[in-house]
Image 1 (tube, rainbow, N blue to C red):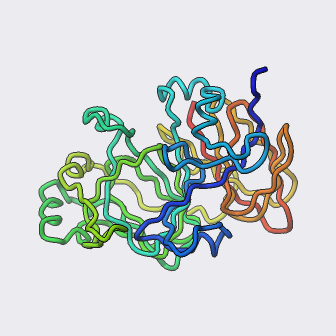
Image 2 (image 1 turned 90 degrees about the horizontal axis):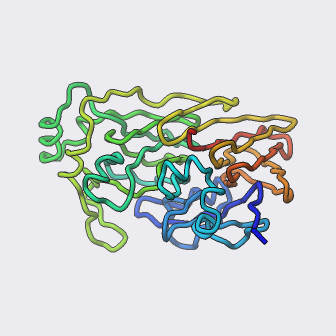
Length: 327
């Protein structure tokens, strides 16, 4: 008998210790963080080897997303998505807690990754700010800064002088394609959707030791190869009230922001799977195999072809983000 995929797979994240992390995700979202360490990232939807999220309820409970992907393949993510990404799981959804500034960094695109024979894909990403203590983000270069100017600033320890910084608040959206110099800074908690990749070229890291006590590696030469010095993008865009709108429509992912005060909404995973992350309120998710309660900060996967009905639990407005692959 062929195993059937459920319509909804609630997920438990992988917790990643980072030198710049903290305990904020436990305070804000009651995450069961491992004790006494600084958690920088929770991998809410992840089939990245060694950092997999795990089904936490329903028929698939206890199985990692990697295992489910191996078993169900294109049925899980959609035939067109499977074909396009060569049988690789395409997206990764995280929550990040920056209690210190992250490194000034840049990500390569797919073409560079292939050219250099790198194991991971390129990395396009978008951030939705969930909480900010008046924090900021680094995003893009000051106008007129070219390769030589930037290389000189790096050599003279003046990187911050040639980068744009923006103060951010809850609801701000930052889209970061490959080639954009950027950094998340202290006091900001975000939702992030990205290509399933860990390719990061660090440019400046404050002479900070890593978890092993040694300085973290920098990648200046690679960064200079992939920075897009011609690209000028707008800064963060405010979306303070999520109300069923597309926040990002890009080559690798579509991110939709949804709000619901009463009644119910239905989401059908047509062509691509859906990753549904609750960022405000509590929700009841209803699928063909049963009902699941979801709290703020939690993520559920709706496999390709699945249908999920969502309704608020209680009086608080329901706010959630839905990520998918364009088909």
